[in-house]
Length: 384
Image (cartoon, rainbow, N blue to C red; front, top):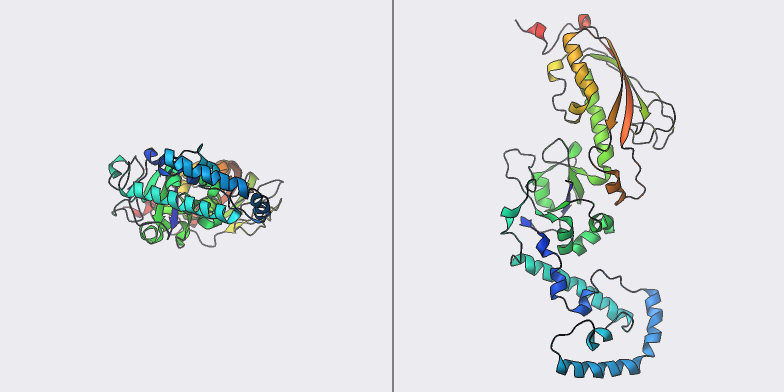
């Protein structure tokens, strides 16, 4: 189940469950005239040109106003079919009035949702016992208290905080929220998010939309750069692990899929291990990594690593280097470069995003012979 974490200084510091029952609360309590104007588009120049035509309907409007007076005497509750609602339609309102009604509708809808939340109708901060598994997010401190923020199904949270989410980052994520790009949505105020979580790579958590790191508790990854960030992390972990196994030289060729620089492999060619090739290049310069001095610590080869633990080739190499004097290894490995986040999800945010679901890499590794390793940290030769 994909969860997204939205961090903003505009969200309240609150632990709150938003349930499916909260859907449509504004529809129930808003007047029909306002209800249909929630999320409406304000009029511009063309609408003002139409105002001239509306002026010609003044006589009709006054007649409708008279009908409104009589209708109010007969009916206490107005519906969308009665004169009041017909009078204040987008076709009969001047642009300035229409825009003010749209603004009023948005403000009243937000007020209704917040009032429903504050009185726990039917869900709120006192309904936290209904949290499902995974709603409480572990932070960077494993001994800290897990937090959920404002959480619930994406549709429900979006309904309650529609304006804030639609306007977030200049509307960049509006389609993602509206089309339910994730199943569960968490809203965190900026201060608590910075205290509770860590950003992947050690950067500062800013106002953004994040997803959880697939292997590290309490670590957030910006959803827009998730695939690129994790591919780079996997690559760096592979270098660390191979270095601890006594690697002397390493060459990695992208057979198909994504290069480590984030471009798509289109023609034969080897990639730049350090990410120096230009994006979109069909052929990148071959770079070889060389270790000047040997290191041999197979016991701790993957310490501090998380993604590389799923790399069968690296794990096989660790076993081989522990039991044999392997000096050369070559393998073509297939990697899931989605890291369990669908490409179509990111396309809801950036329609031009391009990524391959799987990639193939050819690893050619030469190792220092174990005879060249005067010190074997963590090896069996140290014991006894």
